[in-house]
Image (cartoon, rainbow, N blue to C red; front, side, top):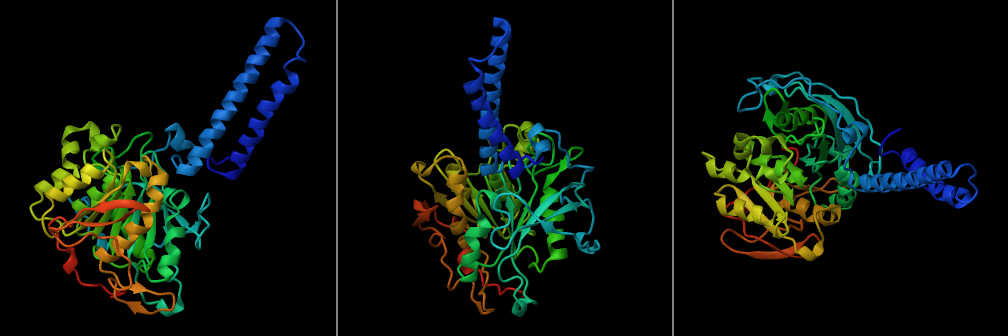
Length: 430
């Protein structure tokens, strides 16, 4: 029985009701020695408490998409078949472009929210470079299947959850596809293909989205194998101009790190309540290794970069939860790197889905503008990406602007010393 399935939830509800009913009807009717009656009553109380805890946990898990299945919950899942040393490039000298195309089989994804806005598809991908085998979820924008746009290629955003976290979370908890579908039809947000790959690849361990020879090649899984699958199977724009990555919490750290490390693979990154120091998730592989901790810290990555990466970074957070990390990146950034910092007041909420869900739309509006994308309307018309789009970016370099953040009052920092305001618009499919 699936951990997140409706049958399991309903079973727990029935058991919880039964656990309350049993003591009410049997408490005073029990017969036998006092010790036996006491033991039975204790078991009834234990049963009631156990079912209540299980039901509450299941409701919280389904709402936040923390654990996708029993192996994730019990820490028995392992999706790594090999983890050889792939070198600095993360490809091990393999020419990814020369690898033969592999057509994946996709099925309809199940679970809360997965059938909304046209439905989400899933596939089991065997990463030929990373040695990882895991599920990937894909949602296509409304325009994708429009016959008049059959030759159009679309931009892509990879969506990363926190830890623990399910790849379904962006759909089942944040409802990203439901929030964006209408705006895409209206031309207010670019018609992005949304791709959510599994990030929990080892049993009970956060990989930090890094390559650790002999253990896991998580970076390569996310930045090489998954993009290769998408471009092999869908009309996706090539990297880096058509690709971005977004995440919340530990996924936000990963998104920023991946974009800075691979400006040849990503144009932009969105971080919701992220962190720079991998110790933000103490159980991660990168936090436990001093060398990896330094090498995978986005702040030091920017600081040591021989050439500032041509990427745009959206960093939103609250005081003590992502905001200072974004300011540090903004201070360190040099052109052509762009860093926009969005301040979220403490009164909005804590480190949870209720905080991140309202930030989905402004983040994707920002991506539309920063990536210079042309919007494609439902009728097939193409407009300039900057025109007709309600962006959430700050003002030009060296100044400060203010805007609404996640549905509440907030402040957007200036664009560091970046030059995103001079980026040219990129027509879709060209």
